[in-house]
Length: 458
Image (tube, rainbow, N blue to C red):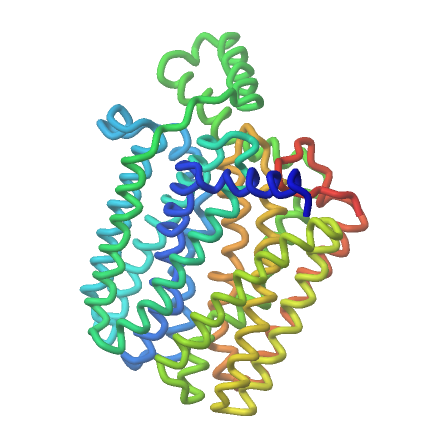
């Protein structure tokens, strides 16, 4: 390696020392922490409380706010908050508000009793998901606006890394704590950890305002249209112009693209098989006789390492073969990894095969996540990053919540081996849509290429 090449490597790594990139990693941690608290960690609590598989499967619906966050994303994007916006700025004000709401919701969930009042537990879990989804909207917008173009790729890597660490703490960390402390104390500890995110928000700066391009053009169009109609004036005119530019604009711009319906369906179904297999994974491991400590060690810690490796390989694969082919490879690997769950179901309590299954599944899932996040980022117009990313990421959550909520019924009626075979088949619609998008070329016909994302025409 030449001296110049070594200097280039050191210069590239220096971007990760920027305080804004480090702050994004911490906010990624705050973003990832709540997901397991309403997912697999809550699933373990419900299982120990005696909830049925049907009830546990239906609890996937508490994540519906993640699928609907695009509805209130324009409000978060443009509306000021009393006092907080004036004190901290638009983005930081909303972040502090969302994080305070999130900590309160997790504390309420901690004081619920799923063994005696399952409905109240579900209500608290929905509140956690809503506050978490709102926080995600603001973090995504803040991340794009606070960084320079050359830092966007580093920011994306930082938020994914922080997100995975947050998920690790609220899954493996929470399961370890639950072997010593009662579940309410575990959840209160998780709420307290989120203070780190709030402190970070107070220490970092507010992004500078940037031109909104298409959004400003649509606002001007609305103003011209209203000027020709004097009877629509005052507050009515202001509201109509705002709704057209901020709410309708992102969706109108997206729907102007070729094959947009197919794109949305693909985003929703690409990880369906993976989500179906994962929604009952913790209950599956417990029913096979694995202890919470074994699940934490293998499924969480070892699985975390495999996921991070998968994220790295997914990024490398996109650089090597292009986005289309990377989506194909990752989609097929995700589908194939589900077959190992079916084999594990027939083998029973086999710790080594559990490690193999978890390793392969998390590796494939990490690769698929890297490819899908790159695809979603490439689809977003710079004028509507927050709202369009909220829309697209909401659709990815549909498979994890609404479509996978029937998993408990499937597992009870089919049994574990056939259930996991069915999750393998469930990956086929996403691959069929990918084939359609590949033929039409709709997936990569993006006007603006973003730094760090390969949009090669395959």
